[in-house]
Length: 318
Image 1 (cartoon, rainbow, N blue to C red):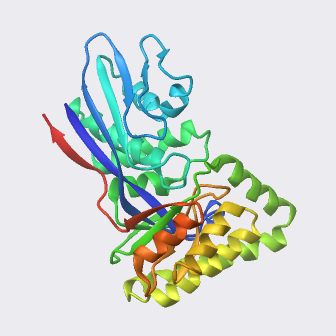
Image 2 (cartoon, rainbow, N blue to C red):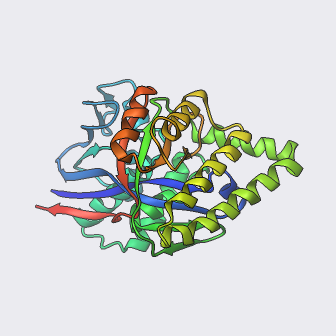
């Protein structure tokens, strides 16, 4: 039996603009997805334990489902297994990351699965190879719209700055609070919506993208110097720009306003593609607890997270 885990992620700054080559900044968080593989002669079985859809399995040898949604929920693992032609195996997914929430759950599952299968089958894949294979598979499942940031952060951890290429950054950890709207989002449709807006109003959208990129660059020294007040201001500005692009929602805005108001956050913004999913907030003098209470009162599900955390790792080889 071999177990590997990989972290989720938050995009601190740069959503949507990064699709057009503008700088974005992301960090790995200490919510993780764990994948365990073990020998199972005569079958290829996928099981889940802690995903939003709980307690189902998918047998790839017979396509027998214990849930009508199992194939959709396990499509990333199925892609990994088919990539390596693995047989006679059981894969168990145990994730603390909500699905379709903008926290990189699919990337974490793919990376953890590739690492676990590499170790279990003696493939000896390097981190670079794990990142490259995982990105290719996630992008394939997402029909060409996967971001290299998600799988890179799941593999390497820490912080990454991405524009035309990916650059790791040595920055201190940040304590933040994630607020989950409980509304899943569709990354593909949100990206397409913004790109369509850009085609129709390029003279308006391009300056917004450039402003978002400038925020991403300004944020790096602020994190390094541990200047949360100014970092929070940049979060507020970035959220306003994302609202202008049409990717926020009533649920996201309510959590953002609750965080900054009753929660005393220094700044807050949506994270990920928008349209649902999650927002992030930087605690102020009132502290993390007050912020989490405010988000609960606004009908969100809060998670306390640390950014800049460790990437993929083996949890055991028994």
